Length: 91
Image (tube, rainbow, N blue to C red; front, side):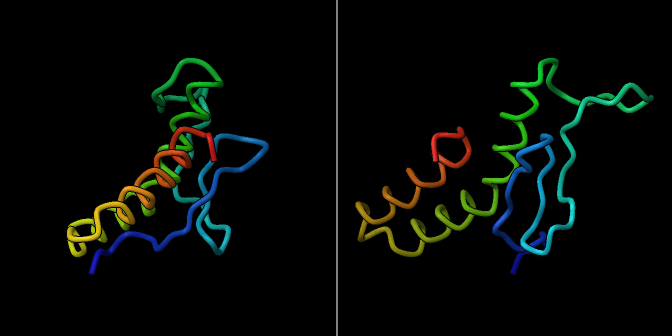
């Protein structure tokens, strides 16, 4: 079993910050003026980064399911497509 914070994760509507189901911060993609530099120069890019991070548990679960159930590829493809939509903001 993985030691990561369990999903689902979601992105705040107000800031590019990723929260877990209990509303604890998983990742902060806000550009800081302090000594810590964050990837993503634009606000849209930071939100895209946050969406990708938030989709990580879904992507992992979809891949694990596909590996375990490779015989039923179409169902696995549907799960993978759902995770991709979440990661790209098309959900």
